[in-house]
Length: 439
Image: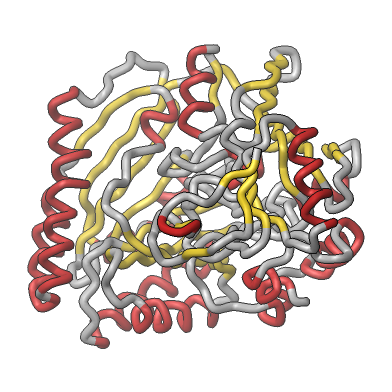
């Protein structure tokens, strides 16, 4: 059941390549009982425990020098309840497999993020989200959770059962226990029409409220060093299905968004002075297009160009001002930014440490190509975001600590009190949790 870590001499690395760890041992449990036994054994051996999914977090939230739990054998759909329209899945199930399996059953999640490589437990524990006027993050669609707590017992929670655990554990940061199964609300599969089109930055900002109000799912990408954006509006459709033709899809999604973009980033990394010119070309490379397909084929797309990312949720009312400040900072700074800035929204939810907890939110994500220095850009951006009481994504780069979070999350103390109850000896502690939740 135990194994050594992958990579050189037992080192685990995340997808972005900016975090590594050397666990004392790795465990790949094949059942909830095996997972519970591994937790008890770790406690006896005085080792900390962390679970790791696909490694798509840019923070060290999953890093440990103790026992690393890999949930890849805990996968698949446990149960479909068509009467209550829920699906219960094992924690290690990749979102990609869940989406395909649901579609086969004529079902779908209401909303999803823009990639689907992550495991369901990793994605929800860090608050992964897409964009939506009424529909929130993946965690906001959870109806029930099963987790193994620090004493090795299995706890289930929902709105009716252990509701105080349910309020927090949907985005639990791996701090309250190891999630073993998740019950999601689902609905009959539907069609979305995506309308992608370039739009000037100033127009997107002046029309932002209308664009948000008129579309179920609105997002846009702004290309730094330009006044250009690419907007995307996804709305439900009566059909018919009109997917992007395969060759066109290859040209736009693989060749331009991944292949040419990769080469452009290599050039930009080698010769930073070329980045503004490349940005102007990139911002014009993708032309307008409209297509209609089932949700996961519209919401998600492949991301093969590796990067590091910081993302903050600001109050939705503050997004336009925040973006103006971000653009002014980039224009003034002499920075060379080759990756677009992504802007999305989410409605307020009732999850204790959700970035949208208790407030309608807008997300602003800044990226840098993997291997290029990102600190100056991210530090300057973070200064702007925090001035608007921004809340950083739990799985993306930030420098905030428990003292800051206690100010921007009104229910922060509720979460830490629950953690004291469920994990008094800090079995699930690591450096990241010590920083963001306090000792």
